[in-house]
Amino acid sequence: MRARYILLQVLGLASFCFSCSPSPAAAAEDETTQAESPVSLINTSHLDHLFTTLKVKDQEVGGIWIYSEAPDYRLVTDEDEGFTCVDDVARSLVFYCRYYEQEPSAKILERIESLAEFILQMQAENGYFNNFVFPDGTVNTTHQNSVATPNSWSWRAFWALTELRVVNAKELKEVQSRSLTVIDVMIPLISQLCPEPEDTYEVAGLSLPRCLSEMGTDQIAVILQGLNNHYRQSPSEELRALIRKMGDLMLSAQAGSEEQAPYGAFLSWQNLWHAWGNTQAYALLSAGELIEEASFVAAGLREVRGFQSYFLAQDGLHAFEIEQKDKKLVLVNVRQFPQIAYNIRPMVYAALKAYELTGEEAYALQAAELTAWFLGDNPAEKVIYDATSGRTFDGINSADQVNQNSGAESTIEALLTLLAVEQVPVAQAALLAVVKPE
Image 1 (spheres, rainbow, N blue to C red):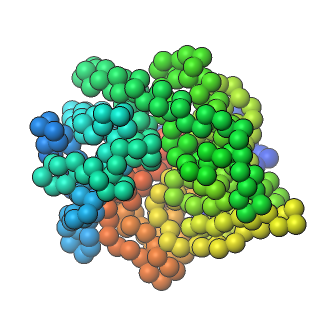
Image 2: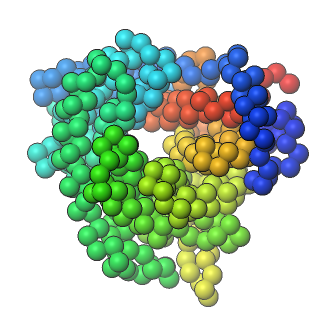
């Protein structure tokens, strides 16, 4: 692919290997040189377009429109679901919390506070969260993807509120305090998950913890990211044990090796792997660093080295299942499409974390190679993220069909990806090489 060729040629990487890393002095000099004139691709204009204010439970909050349709990128609602949701507001909150560290401003603080307020208002009496809201501010409590249950939107709310606590801004102290109260309510709920992790069941010839028959490791990874954040702010033996429990559950769902398919991938749910939300490696690498658990770090690196390389060689994947046949793992129902922004960001996070932990430049360059999907290095050979408008297409349906709508998830996942890459000079330089004139 063209962008991959440019990455390798411009940086002089004829052999892309994981065994070589620059000397500390050379790396420091290189980062200093690159840091002198960075060029940012981040444009929040479309995210601003998706932002709105509304009243939920008589409280003014900030929301993010879920859907924005081409060609005029009008805002639309779903009659069954609503027009904004915890899932996307939480993503936006994470982005703004991280972006504030790079671009502090009163506007971003206002965004953070209003989006956090939305999440706080969406917590139900049982401690979990409803997801969708209708345009009149009514909370959708009946849709199957909006009921307050232990599900992905509740965990994403938890993760976002823990990110809020990390932001160093006195203006946020009050909402951070209320967020901590919510987090403290959720910790016991998380502790109740998978009470007997040693209890297993069989699926497609695999033996997995029984609790993973209902809740996948994709959800556990989101929980673990929140636990990691919370532990950094409020360390305790209880949290440490909970981090270890969640990490061990993910270890049980890692399949294959660096030589055998699926090359260290973490199964998302039962015997299924899917690209969206594949955050397990990143969460494990972060947890392993935090509680000094070498097995977590080793498992995370295994997926980054093995499976991510396989993923790139396939020009991306959407999903597959695995079966155990004759003591060998076999991939079945392999699907390459659709490809979306939420496929890419989690893997970029993992590759960048691997670089941070090991200092091996190849991981940072792999993160740039993955990110280049947004800039045209994809099966459709189309630019998916437009830096002049801030819009990100909603995905690639096939090698010759792009979904040109630009909703919340794709927009925010692209911005989160670019923000992470631009904080690592060697990865940023590699990515910018893709967009420079030949």
